[in-house]
Image (cartoon, rainbow, N blue to C red):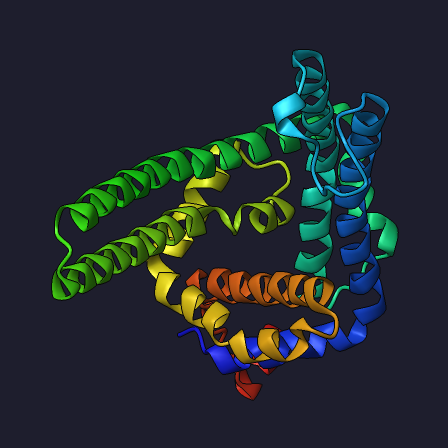
Length: 280
């Protein structure tokens, strides 16, 4: 039985032991994304496709050459970051068990070309599934939106418009929940890879899906239980702290799931005093 309160308390206890390291890890993760963004923006400025008044390049003036450049840059950045993504999960996986690793362990997955290749393949297969679900549910939601707009224009009655808006909102919420239900299956992948770095990729994906299918309600309840903390710290120090807590909560949760699924060790009877005398 997975107890949300115990998981949160264990995760916070583990966080207290490595809060400095986890903060630096989160800042490195966020800093890498910002650095890639700044690099693309600087390239756009040099190409005359970005002004000081805009946050993103001006897409109406986007040239095919710059589009290819930006796409290749993002792809290279993605490939470089894949081992770092699993390295972060590696650190949290061991920290959740009380094993404090050095900060350099987040780069452990760069140790060999074989490990780098496995990380890229596993991350690609995981993201491919999430992207596929995004297109499917996003397409359905877009069609629902067009239909709702047509119905809205067809009838001007306030009651009908209210029913159309309410119906679209309910359907949209249902699709979002379905999308979360499908993509939630692959959140454990990075931590399971840390648990068994040499396991088959197919087995890791299957185990990830299996754990979430069995513990979906518990995992969702764990994340939903954090909403008060997220709101309270959002204005102060939002993204790094939320990322740190989410990683530690997930690592502790998955360790609890795997440990609860293991068979209990068989009891070993202590030999009686008489038996000890006879055997000696």
